[in-house]
Image (cartoon, rainbow, N blue to C red; front, side, top):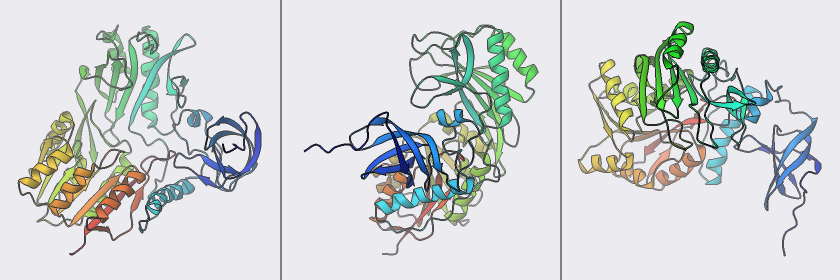
Length: 457
């Protein structure tokens, strides 16, 4: 017999909120049927309206808060919730840090893995931290606008102050937007794949204050580019690089393959843990420099390196972790799938005068197998994979190489827990607490450092 769903769409219900999901939504239950509600916190009682009903759960929106959580703070701007820029802005910062610790605990509990999770390392100022912005440009009500998409849609919400971005970046976006309006550059029209300017990307060095502006266009030609470049240079003295990236494809991918330098250099420079890094338009470089230093310092410290140690850094990017570890270890080998990131990594090693590093381009799992065949014996392997976590074949290669320690920098607690389980089945154990670091305040994302040690057989 078909189970009766206990709620109706567009009806209001009074509910108690019992939990927060990993997406930061409040959870209420009616007859054991879960309803997920944005902008609702545990311990609250709210009147909510059901907006979508599925077979096993529903979504609701808050109509009125009847009993407030002690952890609630006033919204800075509801646009930050609508667009998903700051989905936790209604939650006190110390409660955000506890929530992130709890997220990791929950994923390990699900797999019956007994680990300890330390309190999350937070920021003194959990706002205006991002050193990079990627802002869509669209026509809204007949005017070129910059802002962010409403969640689950491609409707642009015009925004000038992004709350979690470096304020100098926000100012630069407005300057560029106004110049695009002045020179009547046509914004991209997704529906018909027409128009010129798709996105504005801005990077700013946290320590160097060097700024890069990338104009991402659909077309090879950027009308009035000479005048636009001249005015950007005049109005934004920090700008050291202006690049046009051409992306003619009908795609959700942000950037195309072609970068043309319109003014200045092709890179800007910044410092991380006392090391200099050259950052290009396409470089992957962590967006929260203050917390990245804490994260990488932790990873290096927990690797417990000595001057005789050999390290492999899988997913090395432009060499940020590799070079930090190369200051201590005997030799560091880095592998990264993006050839241009490997070129950057080699350049960064040179800039910092580090000769005990070697970078190769390739899939981490293939290269690890190759190194293993060549008889390379690392003491420590560090991994910093994308959200999908590690491939099973990579874990196998790591285990075959028998390093003393594996340092796992994770941006997704669910795949971290899954991978740790695979490692524990093959003789590696987590003997010290996992350390979460809040790289993305006001959002639901959490980074962490986990150390797996080989158990003596």
